[in-house]
Amino acid sequence: MTVYWILIIGAAALGIPLCGMRESKPGIKTAVFCGVFAAALTVTAAVRLSVGIDYNMYAMLFYNMNFMSYEDFGHIQREMGMLFPVKIIEIFTFDYVPSFVFLSIAMYPPLLHFIRKNSDNPWISVFAFLAFGVFFNSLNFMRQFFAAIICAYAYKYAEKGNFFRFFVLVLFAACFHRSAFLVIPCYLFVYITMNWSVLVLSLLTAISAYAFSNKVLEIVTAHFYKNYNLERAGREVVNGLTYVYMAMFGVIFLLGFLFRNRIKGSTREKNILLWCSYGAFFFELIGMKHAIVSRVALLFMIPTVTLLVPKVWCAVLDLVSGIGRSTEDETEQESGQRKISGAGRAAAAALAAVMLMLMSGLYYNLISRDYNGVMPYQTISVRGESSD
Image 1 (spheres, rainbow, N blue to C red):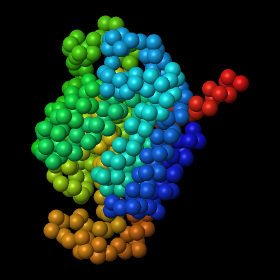
Image 2: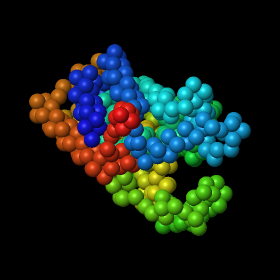
Image 3: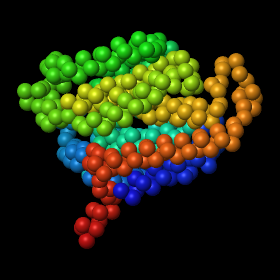
Image 4: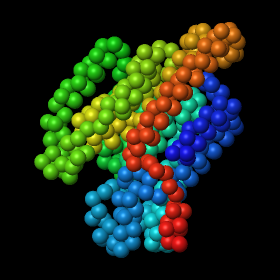
């Protein structure tokens, strides 16, 4: 548990001096923070051993691939985006550990680059990434997490109205996990503004999907994911998850909606972030009946926790401290001249502390639940000790 607390405490301890408590500007300080945590998350994931429910399954697969011809390799019933590089690595070694090292290097630096380029405040993004358990997801569902990172970049092209690049990136993401194809219709959401009428319709859709999820899953598994057919389903299909995961993404979605007129960003950016938060909430809701479906939520989590959470954070602190919402016509100099009273600063600081404690409490809850089998954390050094 210690290493996880070092990560999240370090995010705040390093991030606040470098990035501040509100919106931060891109620069050397934010670059340093993102570089440090790109390395920290990479090392934490790279040197782990049997951490995560899927770790041993992947380790066995990577090891067995040493004894497969390329013809046999082609018959593996998994997308090749992640496995093909592993097959190349195994030309040089029979050990599966270098594969995890390579995959970690390929995973977290691009994620931190995405945060550095797009987040209103990188340290809040990293703190939320940890607190809401998305880092723990990355230690398990690696193929889907690679797809999620690529989709996060694709959403930015959707925001710019560039369908071709959006579509190409989604196709690339599907090379890692076929569920990425579900993201293609999301391009339309850029043009659908979330208002009260749309909110009611969206919630009614979520409730209906929850009620008729068995029927929908029967159709999906009959044509696509046949291994998850309800007639021969495993526990992840017929059993659900606790409400905690649905609730935490539901809160983000609700806060994003309530503060939608105060958070900064273009209309398209707000639209895609609100719909991503709804997507995370929606699939976690269905996951309460069918745990396997909650994995689809991962495709929407990265923009939700790394981009929307910092925007809501800044909007809430600005509101409490008495700063009005900036207008599009307001110059940067005029924006910087807005004063905050002493009482406003104190109220904002107190609220920031409360929000950090709440997210830390959620983080503790996930760790204590052994969320996705991330406890206990141990490193590959254990292998050497066991062989002595």
